[in-house]
Length: 154
Image (cartoon, rainbow, N blue to C red; front, side, top):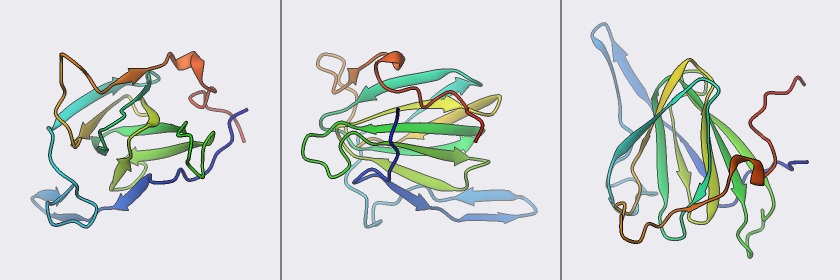
């Protein structure tokens, strides 16, 4: 059974939404933020309700996730041999129902996403550009780790 904890190195940074009668603006990340490392690329990954996109991890890359629309459950699993939270899972809700936040996922932490609204999107600003010849991406099937995706009554 999955054991949950705040995974070492994972950070949820609260963001500020500045709104008026015209709309809103949210600064996701700036080059002068304390946590900023470097720019690799920017992309958006969308997901339909109930679809699980998991599991993958990167050995080099840090991911910076922001959900601009919808609500997404981010699942995390720490498999790093020298981590204080090795073997632990973490769930983070981002987006409309989870608050304005930026989620920082360090290298070697397995992660995935599942839309819990009808449709959601994750903007990622990773530290590395995707390399098609030698991708820094390692995959496991959704069934290879504990099922943290199924909503259970508590």
